[in-house]
Image (tube, rainbow, N blue to C red; front, side):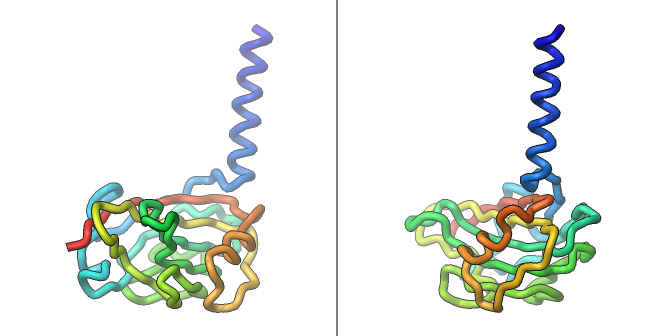
Length: 171
């Protein structure tokens, strides 16, 4: 019985640690592609290269801001960042309609440009992760900050997160 209680306490402690480390679940989806499905060419380098519309729901009430990072872990050079936005209003349910950022500050992607750079794999099918983070503060970063700066500023301040993964193969 004591070992069962110890195991139960361990799981409860792990759940508290996960939440403190940003384990709160936020729902992120797109009306243009389902989770795990192909991203339409319109939102890639083969099309208009505009950002897909994203729906973000369930940010913790104590969140002060949201950050969004879109990256490709399958890039030949390693993790490739396609889009970074921070200081978005956490109460915004539809945060980013196509090609338009209603609120927030954009950073520099790995194409070397500020803003969205759509999927453009050199070969094969790549996975693209749209990751949203609820933060307990606003980030004090200048527009055009790079991924490493955003990651460092978010460290220890994530109180919820969610992700949407889509795939793309260049035409």
